[in-house]
Length: 328
Ligand code: NDP
Figure 1: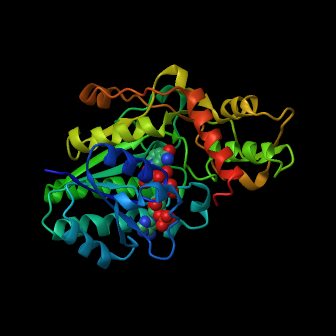
Figure 2: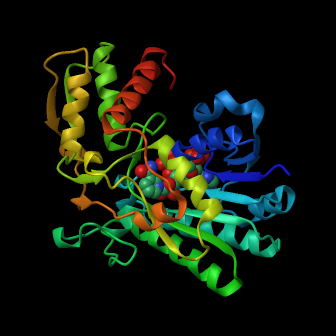
Protein backbone atom coordinates (compact mmCIF):
# COMPACT_ATOMS: atom_id res chain seq x y z
CA UNK A 1 0.00 0.00 0.00
CA UNK A 2 1.25 3.49 -0.79
CA UNK A 3 2.65 5.18 2.29
CA UNK A 4 1.09 8.53 3.21
CA UNK A 5 3.54 11.15 4.35
CA UNK A 6 2.60 14.48 5.89
CA UNK A 7 5.32 17.12 6.01
CA UNK A 8 4.74 20.19 8.15
CA UNK A 9 7.08 22.97 6.97
CA UNK A 10 7.12 21.53 3.44
CA UNK A 11 7.91 24.98 2.01
CA UNK A 12 11.11 25.24 4.08
CA UNK A 13 14.66 24.03 3.52
CA UNK A 14 14.46 20.54 5.03
CA UNK A 15 10.75 19.97 4.34
CA UNK A 16 11.12 20.61 0.61
CA UNK A 17 14.06 18.19 0.30
CA UNK A 18 12.12 15.60 2.31
CA UNK A 19 9.22 16.01 -0.13
CA UNK A 20 11.59 15.33 -3.05
CA UNK A 21 12.86 12.19 -1.29
CA UNK A 22 9.40 10.95 -0.33
CA UNK A 23 8.23 11.29 -3.95
CA UNK A 24 11.31 9.36 -5.12
CA UNK A 25 10.34 6.61 -2.66
CA UNK A 26 6.87 6.43 -4.20
CA UNK A 27 4.98 7.91 -1.23
CA UNK A 28 1.80 9.99 -1.34
CA UNK A 29 2.97 13.39 -0.10
CA UNK A 30 0.91 15.94 1.80
CA UNK A 31 2.23 19.21 3.17
CA UNK A 32 1.13 22.15 5.26
CA UNK A 33 1.40 25.71 4.08
CA UNK A 34 0.21 28.96 5.62
CA UNK A 35 -2.51 30.30 3.39
CA UNK A 36 -1.23 33.86 3.07
CA UNK A 37 2.40 33.64 4.17
CA UNK A 38 4.19 30.65 2.75
CA UNK A 39 6.85 31.12 0.11
CA UNK A 40 6.29 28.41 -2.45
CA UNK A 41 9.55 28.74 -4.38
CA UNK A 42 11.13 25.65 -2.75
CA UNK A 43 8.31 23.35 -3.89
CA UNK A 44 7.29 24.94 -7.18
CA UNK A 45 8.93 22.06 -9.08
CA UNK A 46 6.70 19.46 -7.37
CA UNK A 47 3.43 21.37 -6.94
CA UNK A 48 1.54 19.01 -9.26
CA UNK A 49 2.77 15.92 -7.35
CA UNK A 50 1.85 16.87 -3.77
CA UNK A 51 -1.28 17.89 -1.87
CA UNK A 52 -1.08 21.10 0.13
CA UNK A 53 -3.28 21.94 3.12
CA UNK A 54 -3.65 25.41 4.59
CA UNK A 55 -2.60 25.35 8.24
CA UNK A 56 -0.85 27.63 10.67
CA UNK A 57 0.21 25.28 13.46
CA UNK A 58 -0.25 27.88 16.17
CA UNK A 59 -4.00 27.37 15.65
CA UNK A 60 -5.09 23.92 16.92
CA UNK A 61 -8.27 23.73 14.83
CA UNK A 62 -6.99 23.30 11.28
CA UNK A 63 -4.45 20.61 12.08
CA UNK A 64 -7.11 18.43 13.75
CA UNK A 65 -9.18 18.33 10.57
CA UNK A 66 -6.14 17.69 8.41
CA UNK A 67 -4.92 14.73 10.49
CA UNK A 68 -8.43 13.21 10.40
CA UNK A 69 -8.73 13.76 6.65
CA UNK A 70 -5.25 12.67 5.55
CA UNK A 71 -4.60 9.89 8.10
CA UNK A 72 -0.86 9.94 7.49
CA UNK A 73 1.39 6.96 8.21
CA UNK A 74 4.40 9.17 8.90
CA UNK A 75 4.60 12.84 9.87
CA UNK A 76 7.80 14.81 9.44
CA UNK A 77 7.35 17.85 11.63
CA UNK A 78 9.60 20.40 9.92
CA UNK A 79 7.50 23.51 10.63
CA UNK A 80 9.40 25.83 12.94
CA UNK A 81 10.88 29.19 13.62
CA UNK A 82 14.33 27.90 12.80
CA UNK A 83 16.66 30.92 12.73
CA UNK A 84 18.50 31.58 16.00
CA UNK A 85 19.20 35.34 15.63
CA UNK A 86 15.65 36.76 15.82
CA UNK A 87 14.76 34.51 18.74
CA UNK A 88 16.14 36.96 21.34
CA UNK A 89 13.62 39.57 20.19
CA UNK A 90 10.73 37.08 19.81
CA UNK A 91 11.17 34.50 22.58
CA UNK A 92 7.42 34.05 23.10
CA UNK A 93 6.72 33.64 19.41
CA UNK A 94 9.40 30.93 19.17
CA UNK A 95 7.62 29.03 21.95
CA UNK A 96 4.26 29.58 20.21
CA UNK A 97 5.46 27.98 17.00
CA UNK A 98 8.06 25.46 18.16
CA UNK A 99 6.44 24.31 21.40
CA UNK A 100 2.71 25.12 21.17
CA UNK A 101 2.66 24.25 17.45
CA UNK A 102 4.08 20.83 18.34
CA UNK A 103 1.53 20.35 21.11
CA UNK A 104 -1.23 21.16 18.61
CA UNK A 105 0.13 18.57 16.20
CA UNK A 106 0.55 15.89 18.87
CA UNK A 107 -2.92 16.55 20.26
CA UNK A 108 -4.43 16.31 16.79
CA UNK A 109 -2.75 12.93 16.28
CA UNK A 110 -3.84 11.74 19.74
CA UNK A 111 -7.45 12.85 19.28
CA UNK A 112 -7.63 11.15 15.87
CA UNK A 113 -6.53 7.88 17.51
CA UNK A 114 -3.77 7.72 14.90
CA UNK A 115 -0.66 5.60 15.35
CA UNK A 116 1.35 7.63 12.85
CA UNK A 117 5.09 7.83 13.42
CA UNK A 118 5.89 11.48 14.17
CA UNK A 119 9.42 12.69 13.63
CA UNK A 120 10.46 15.69 15.77
CA UNK A 121 13.73 17.18 14.46
CA UNK A 122 15.66 18.44 17.47
CA UNK A 123 18.83 20.45 17.08
CA UNK A 124 22.43 20.30 18.28
CA UNK A 125 21.81 23.92 19.37
CA UNK A 126 19.95 22.48 22.37
CA UNK A 127 23.33 21.56 23.90
CA UNK A 128 24.50 25.20 23.82
CA UNK A 129 27.35 25.79 26.24
CA UNK A 130 29.55 22.76 25.68
CA UNK A 131 33.11 22.56 26.99
CA UNK A 132 36.03 21.16 25.04
CA UNK A 133 36.23 18.10 27.32
CA UNK A 134 32.56 17.28 26.55
CA UNK A 135 33.26 16.80 22.84
CA UNK A 136 32.01 14.66 21.19
CA UNK A 137 28.46 15.28 22.37
CA UNK A 138 26.41 12.15 23.01
CA UNK A 139 22.75 11.45 23.75
CA UNK A 140 23.66 11.77 27.46
CA UNK A 141 25.44 15.14 27.37
CA UNK A 142 23.87 17.82 29.58
CA UNK A 143 21.73 20.48 27.83
CA UNK A 144 22.71 24.12 28.50
CA UNK A 145 20.85 26.05 25.79
CA UNK A 146 22.00 29.66 25.38
CA UNK A 147 19.36 31.16 23.08
CA UNK A 148 15.55 31.24 23.03
CA UNK A 149 15.41 29.14 19.84
CA UNK A 150 17.33 26.34 21.56
CA UNK A 151 15.07 26.50 24.62
CA UNK A 152 12.01 26.16 22.38
CA UNK A 153 13.58 23.11 20.71
CA UNK A 154 14.29 21.49 24.09
CA UNK A 155 10.64 22.09 25.00
CA UNK A 156 9.52 20.57 21.68
CA UNK A 157 11.64 17.49 22.24
CA UNK A 158 10.52 16.96 25.82
CA UNK A 159 6.83 17.35 25.09
CA UNK A 160 7.34 14.71 22.39
CA UNK A 161 8.78 12.43 25.04
CA UNK A 162 5.82 13.16 27.31
CA UNK A 163 3.35 12.15 24.57
CA UNK A 164 5.33 9.00 23.94
CA UNK A 165 5.43 8.01 27.60
CA UNK A 166 1.89 9.14 28.47
CA UNK A 167 -0.04 7.93 25.43
CA UNK A 168 2.37 5.44 23.86
CA UNK A 169 2.55 7.57 20.74
CA UNK A 170 5.18 6.85 18.10
CA UNK A 171 7.27 9.97 18.58
CA UNK A 172 10.72 9.74 16.97
CA UNK A 173 13.22 12.07 18.63
CA UNK A 174 16.40 13.18 16.87
CA UNK A 175 18.93 15.96 17.38
CA UNK A 176 20.77 16.86 14.21
CA UNK A 177 23.87 18.97 13.73
CA UNK A 178 24.21 21.59 10.98
CA UNK A 179 22.85 20.64 7.60
CA UNK A 180 23.41 22.86 4.62
CA UNK A 181 22.81 23.06 0.89
CA UNK A 182 20.49 24.49 -1.75
CA UNK A 183 17.29 26.22 -0.53
CA UNK A 184 18.54 27.05 2.95
CA UNK A 185 17.45 30.64 3.44
CA UNK A 186 20.16 33.26 3.05
CA UNK A 187 19.86 34.45 6.62
CA UNK A 188 21.82 31.36 7.81
CA UNK A 189 25.68 31.50 8.01
CA UNK A 190 26.91 29.49 5.04
CA UNK A 191 23.93 30.37 2.84
CA UNK A 192 24.47 34.03 3.77
CA UNK A 193 28.13 33.94 2.70
CA UNK A 194 27.30 32.07 -0.53
CA UNK A 195 24.47 34.48 -1.36
CA UNK A 196 26.81 37.45 -0.96
CA UNK A 197 29.52 35.81 -3.11
CA UNK A 198 26.87 35.22 -5.79
CA UNK A 199 25.73 38.86 -5.61
CA UNK A 200 29.30 40.09 -5.80
CA UNK A 201 29.93 37.90 -8.86
CA UNK A 202 26.77 39.27 -10.48
CA UNK A 203 27.88 42.86 -9.84
CA UNK A 204 24.98 43.46 -7.44
CA UNK A 205 27.19 44.09 -4.40
CA UNK A 206 30.61 45.69 -3.93
CA UNK A 207 33.28 43.05 -3.14
CA UNK A 208 32.77 43.37 0.60
CA UNK A 209 31.23 40.41 2.41
CA UNK A 210 29.62 41.11 5.79
CA UNK A 211 29.55 38.49 8.52
CA UNK A 212 28.75 37.98 12.17
CA UNK A 213 30.88 35.84 14.48
CA UNK A 214 32.71 33.18 12.42
CA UNK A 215 34.88 31.29 14.93
CA UNK A 216 32.31 28.63 15.90
CA UNK A 217 33.07 25.05 14.96
CA UNK A 218 30.48 22.59 13.63
CA UNK A 219 30.14 19.28 11.86
CA UNK A 220 28.34 19.79 8.55
CA UNK A 221 26.07 17.44 6.62
CA UNK A 222 24.65 17.88 3.12
CA UNK A 223 20.88 18.26 3.13
CA UNK A 224 20.48 15.27 0.81
CA UNK A 225 22.34 13.05 3.27
CA UNK A 226 20.31 14.50 6.14
CA UNK A 227 16.90 13.79 4.60
CA UNK A 228 17.99 10.20 3.91
CA UNK A 229 18.88 10.00 7.61
CA UNK A 230 15.49 11.45 8.60
CA UNK A 231 13.71 8.95 6.40
CA UNK A 232 15.57 6.08 8.10
CA UNK A 233 14.93 7.64 11.51
CA UNK A 234 11.19 7.91 10.94
CA UNK A 235 10.97 4.30 9.76
CA UNK A 236 13.53 2.52 11.95
CA UNK A 237 14.21 4.39 15.19
CA UNK A 238 12.62 3.34 18.44
CA UNK A 239 9.85 5.74 19.53
CA UNK A 240 10.72 7.78 22.62
CA UNK A 241 14.46 7.15 22.39
CA UNK A 242 16.80 9.99 21.44
CA UNK A 243 19.19 9.76 18.48
CA UNK A 244 21.93 12.16 17.37
CA UNK A 245 22.37 12.59 13.62
CA UNK A 246 25.12 14.25 11.62
CA UNK A 247 28.57 13.85 10.20
CA UNK A 248 31.16 13.09 12.82
CA UNK A 249 33.98 12.43 10.33
CA UNK A 250 36.93 14.77 10.92
CA UNK A 251 36.86 15.93 7.31
CA UNK A 252 33.44 17.49 7.91
CA UNK A 253 34.33 19.54 10.99
CA UNK A 254 35.08 23.18 10.21
CA UNK A 255 34.69 26.67 11.60
CA UNK A 256 32.39 29.11 9.78
CA UNK A 257 35.54 31.14 9.02
CA UNK A 258 37.04 28.14 7.18
CA UNK A 259 33.79 27.70 5.25
CA UNK A 260 33.85 31.37 4.32
CA UNK A 261 37.48 31.18 3.13
CA UNK A 262 36.65 28.18 0.97
CA UNK A 263 33.63 29.92 -0.58
CA UNK A 264 35.72 33.00 -1.35
CA UNK A 265 38.36 30.76 -2.93
CA UNK A 266 35.61 29.25 -5.15
CA UNK A 267 34.53 32.69 -6.35
CA UNK A 268 35.29 34.04 -9.81
CA UNK A 269 35.97 37.45 -8.20
CA UNK A 270 39.41 38.18 -6.69
CA UNK A 271 40.03 40.25 -3.59
CA UNK A 272 36.72 39.88 -1.77
CA UNK A 273 37.08 41.69 1.55
CA UNK A 274 35.47 40.32 4.72
CA UNK A 275 34.07 42.73 7.30
CA UNK A 276 32.56 41.72 10.63
CA UNK A 277 29.37 43.71 11.13
CA UNK A 278 28.07 44.10 14.70
CA UNK A 279 24.55 43.86 13.28
CA UNK A 280 25.11 40.12 12.69
CA UNK A 281 26.85 39.34 15.98
CA UNK A 282 24.64 37.45 18.46
CA UNK A 283 24.42 38.12 22.22
CA UNK A 284 25.78 34.60 22.90
CA UNK A 285 27.55 32.05 20.75
CA UNK A 286 27.85 28.30 20.69
CA UNK A 287 31.59 27.77 20.04
CA UNK A 288 31.60 24.03 19.40
CA UNK A 289 29.02 21.40 18.49
CA UNK A 290 30.50 18.11 17.40
CA UNK A 291 28.38 15.03 17.94
CA UNK A 292 28.93 11.31 18.28
CA UNK A 293 26.28 9.76 16.03
CA UNK A 294 27.38 6.13 16.33
CA UNK A 295 24.15 4.91 17.95
CA UNK A 296 22.04 6.07 14.99
CA UNK A 297 24.56 4.72 12.48
CA UNK A 298 24.68 1.29 14.13
CA UNK A 299 20.90 1.02 13.89
CA UNK A 300 20.41 2.31 10.35
CA UNK A 301 23.78 1.90 8.58
CA UNK A 302 23.46 5.54 7.53
CA UNK A 303 26.62 7.33 6.51
CA UNK A 304 26.98 10.77 4.92
CA UNK A 305 28.21 10.53 1.34
CA UNK A 306 28.79 14.15 0.30
CA UNK A 307 31.95 16.04 1.29
CA UNK A 308 32.25 19.54 2.69
CA UNK A 309 33.58 21.20 -0.49
CA UNK A 310 30.59 19.80 -2.41
CA UNK A 311 28.20 21.12 0.25
CA UNK A 312 29.70 24.57 -0.26
CA UNK A 313 29.76 24.36 -4.05
CA UNK A 314 26.13 23.15 -4.25
CA UNK A 315 25.11 26.04 -1.98
CA UNK A 316 27.08 28.59 -4.00
CA UNK A 317 25.72 27.32 -7.32
CA UNK A 318 22.17 27.47 -5.95
CA UNK A 319 22.64 31.16 -5.04
CA UNK A 320 24.37 31.92 -8.34
CA UNK A 321 21.30 30.62 -10.18
CA UNK A 322 18.94 32.37 -7.74
CA UNK A 323 20.62 35.77 -8.11
CA UNK A 324 21.10 35.48 -11.88
CA UNK A 325 17.45 34.58 -12.49
CA UNK A 326 16.06 36.89 -9.79
CA UNK A 327 14.13 34.06 -8.10
CA UNK A 328 13.08 36.09 -5.02
P1 NDP B 1 13.01 26.58 7.57
O1 NDP B 1 13.00 27.88 8.32
O2 NDP B 1 13.66 26.54 6.23
O3 NDP B 1 11.51 26.06 7.40
C1 NDP B 1 10.55 26.24 8.40
C2 NDP B 1 9.20 25.84 7.87
O4 NDP B 1 8.24 26.03 8.93
C3 NDP B 1 8.71 26.66 6.69
O5 NDP B 1 8.08 25.79 5.78
C4 NDP B 1 7.66 27.59 7.31
O6 NDP B 1 6.62 27.86 6.42
C5 NDP B 1 7.10 26.67 8.40
N1 NDP B 1 6.42 27.42 9.46
C6 NDP B 1 6.90 28.42 10.23
N2 NDP B 1 5.97 28.84 11.11
C7 NDP B 1 4.87 28.06 10.90
C8 NDP B 1 3.59 28.01 11.50
N3 NDP B 1 3.23 28.85 12.49
N4 NDP B 1 2.68 27.11 11.04
C9 NDP B 1 3.01 26.26 10.03
N5 NDP B 1 4.22 26.27 9.41
C10 NDP B 1 5.14 27.16 9.85
O7 NDP B 1 13.68 25.53 8.59
P2 NDP B 1 14.51 24.19 8.25
O8 NDP B 1 13.86 23.50 7.13
O9 NDP B 1 15.97 24.50 8.17
O10 NDP B 1 14.33 23.37 9.59
C11 NDP B 1 13.36 22.33 9.72
C12 NDP B 1 13.43 21.78 11.14
O11 NDP B 1 14.72 21.22 11.37
C13 NDP B 1 13.23 22.85 12.23
O12 NDP B 1 12.50 22.28 13.30
C14 NDP B 1 14.63 23.14 12.70
O13 NDP B 1 14.64 23.59 14.04
C15 NDP B 1 15.27 21.75 12.58
N6 NDP B 1 16.71 21.75 12.48
C16 NDP B 1 17.36 22.34 11.43
C17 NDP B 1 18.73 22.32 11.36
C18 NDP B 1 19.49 22.86 10.18
O14 NDP B 1 20.73 22.82 10.19
N7 NDP B 1 18.79 23.29 9.12
C19 NDP B 1 19.56 21.72 12.44
C20 NDP B 1 18.77 21.04 13.42
C21 NDP B 1 17.41 21.09 13.46
P3 NDP B 1 6.39 29.26 5.65
O15 NDP B 1 6.85 29.05 4.25
O16 NDP B 1 4.93 29.43 5.78
O17 NDP B 1 7.18 30.33 6.39
